[in-house]
Image (cartoon, rainbow, N blue to C red):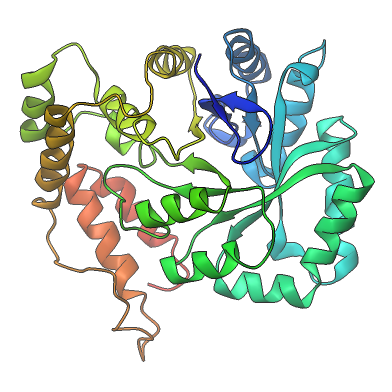
Length: 342
């Protein structure tokens, strides 16, 4: 396992982090975690060098933190650094910050959380947090020892990312990044900006929700196999991310022991600045091949918003395009049917 320095901190973490939101479940019910399998996976990951475990209040219907607490018994808690996230959308007043933190400590069966994130920040949520004195809470929680380091995960436009980064002495942030999303949300520019500020940067959605690990279009498959037929699409996608020295750790939400083993092997054999010019060119061509499958040339500029009929036009186009790019129209349709604004 490779380890990378955690921003300006005096310690390192494993380059692969275990994301605890896609555990194996029973009867296809996300709230019913298969505890035996999930605990075995977490402990196998730790036994093989993973020391960054990431969960959150709402994962698996609120049961992920409970499962993680069980998995970290028998001495495993002392072997890792634990990350979880404040359910900021439930915070209506200052006291709620402490209420949910204490609840999470209880569920996780620990007296402290190493990495505590404000979950899924965007402009509106951040404004609400400031009104509820989030910075005062973080200072108090750190001083009390209940949390060690403060960070945030991000889901909004790039401009708002910089605003949040500059608002507080955060230790780290968590952003979505993969070779298809270099200009999405914080993107590559956000990665480099946060790193230059001395922050550790944790990566989520490295495989775009698994889409970049499945069977790629023929053109993409031929590109990858022309260089090395033994490497999987997941290997290419993760290796591309590990190539950036600014990336601290990559979270992967793994559902099977086979997925875990593949990711362990990839993480153990990938270093920063390791990809050669030919490999990087292949990645650019793979991205272009996917983009050629889009049906609507929408850049996501949001100039069409707000819609007088309250239609989330960019999100609709995004789902439609991704359904064609990744041959996931059924999943895209399911997501569309669950949108609050169609």
